[in-house]
Length: 434
Ligand code: SAH
Image (cartoon, rainbow, N blue to C red; front, side, top):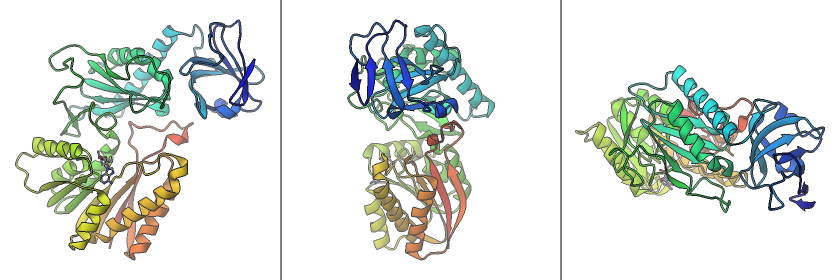
């Protein structure tokens, strides 16, 4: 026996699977289906007989038991403050665990996620872009799958999911009839320094048709969101290549855009800009600090509106750009602020809130009387109330009269597991500025 991270590990066990035993009364959240076991809740670890090292392996499938010996669930072991991410609870089909079980689990969860998206009308001729798996929200902690037409892009956020990647890819092509190819892109999402075997990027399933060349990503791949075409570059782009989570909020921008001068800050591939153009905006300015993003915006505008003369894309830092526009006395009728997560961790929340206040104050100052601001935060660590307070402070700083018209959030293909409220991350406010 030895000690590791404050709990003791017994290095031998006759059973076939490593078992994590919780401290007494630490099973309560799991009995309410919360999918995480924090390392502080672990009393003991009983390693299975095959272990060569003295610790569970990162990504290993482990069983979780209460202090009084009840089987609570099965999940992936992790190094860090979350010790286990649970894949199944209680005695939910926990027999014969192993590769076969994982394959069955992936098929069941992916089929259920796909069915949900079909039933709520997300898959249509004019919309083949959607998130198929949203981690805990689809009962697969550590996994994200975005679908672009006949290609799925998979991101593993845990070594456990990395180990399951082939089973995931096979379950996707078996269950989702449209998907023919599966690309894996996890170099930025797997825990830093985690011991990972095999490639972190590349095709998991590639039907070798001319449309899917052996090269890492086709040069020109287009997908459709609400009837608009977007070029998706999952290899060089951010995340899986596109921010699907703003689809419904973009549609709302379209409703307000007619006749307006629109400024889309942090535009990335220009999602909001395209909807504003379709909604009849008088002019649209798209701003992003990344030149690659601006190239994509221009390609997307050209593809959807070949004769467009009222769109301008600018590569610039958002704060500098707003200051410059202000100095020139420019104003807009509708501004969209969709910055990257200002707080990636809890310790960064204070600074993040200052950042949100600063950028929102700059934007509110630049809205013409009677104009509208769409403002967002995708920082999970900043909750709805804190974000609203930052925007409130920004409004107060400008002295403008401001009303909240809409309170926005993540869309239906980024569901929140009711037992895992931490899954809520995107929030937005639509403000009317007098
Ligand atoms: N609104 C986009 C998604 C925004 S993601 C959409 O609908 O798809 C955030 C974007 O902010 C990224 O494209 C990133 O390049 C850009 N960005 C990050 N820091 C920036 C800064 N200081 N100024 C301008 N853009 C920035």
